[in-house]
Length: 396
Image (cartoon, rainbow, N blue to C red):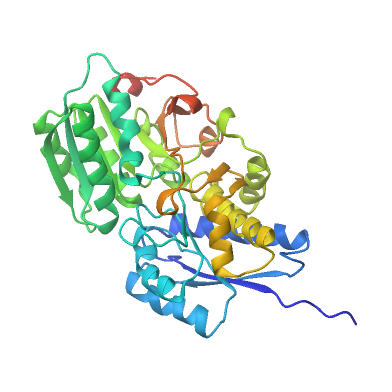
C-alpha cells in the first residue's frame, strides 16, 4: 500500500456568527472551494490540504486563544488571517511572537502600527489604506459641476470606523471640502430617522457614511424617507456590497456611490474569476449565504491562491521563507495580479467606487452583472457615467 502523505493543515478563525457573518460565511465557502480545487489538482507539494477554522463569534478577545489553540494543540502548518480589522489586530501580537507568515483578509491598516514584515493584506487599499478606501468618493465629487463644497460624516461608534473616518477627514482636506457635521451612532441603533434629520439640517452637499450591514439598511431607508437630497451619498458603507442587503433595499439604493473591491464588469473579469463564481453561486443558496459572492468571496479565494503560490514556489511551509518570497513576488489570482508593498499592503491601490443605477424591484438577477452596478472610479475600470447629483439617479 502506498503511503498517504501527511496533509498540510491551514488554521484560522472567522466571525461565522455575529454582525459580519454574512461576509465571513461567504469567505468560508470560498476557502472550501479553493481547498477542493487544490486537492483535485493533487494538493500542495503532493500533500492534501486541510482547513481548520474556528468561529470567534465576533468577539476579538477570543481570537488570541483560538490562534494559540491552532498552533499549539492543532499544530497547523500555516495560519491565515481571519476577516476584518478587529480580528486581525487581535491575532497580530501572537502571530508576531511566533514569527508566523500571515495573509489577512480585508483588514484596513492592520499593520500600520506593527510594521510586521511577515504580514500581507488581502485588501486592495494599497500602501495608504485609510486614504485609499475613501479617496475615490471625494475625487469624484471634486470633478462635478457645480462643485460640492461641504460634507457631513456619519459613522458607527465602532473600531472598524476609525480608519475610514481618518481617511475621510484627510481626503476632505485634500480636495477642499468643509466638514459641517460629524456624528456617530451606537451599533444598537434601530431608528435612524433622527440621525438623518440632523444631517439634513446641516445642508451638506456630500453625505459620507461608514456603517455595518444592518446599519446600512436603516440608514438608506431613513435617507430615502427624508426630503433632503445631498448631491452625493455613500462612500464607506459595509452592506451594499452584500447581495441580501442589495435585494432587501432594491431601488432605494439607486444613486448611492460606495466602495467595492471587485465588480462584475468587463475590465475586471480576470482569469478564473467567472469559473470560481460559477462554483460559488451553485452552492451559496443551499448554504444560506450571499448568493452572488461579489464582495468577500473573490478576495478570500485569492487569499488562498497567494498562500498556495508561495508554498509551491518555496517548496515548503517555512514561515520565514514564505514571507521573504511574498515580499518580492507577483501573484496571479482571480482578482488580478497582486504585488505587495509597504507593511504588506498592495503596492498599488485598486478601490472601486460603484454607483447603483436603474434598479426596480428586489430581484437578485439585476445585480448579477455590471449593468446596474456602474464602476465610476478609478478611470482604468470605469464602466459607465456617474449620475450627479444623487437626485438625478432616483428617477432612472
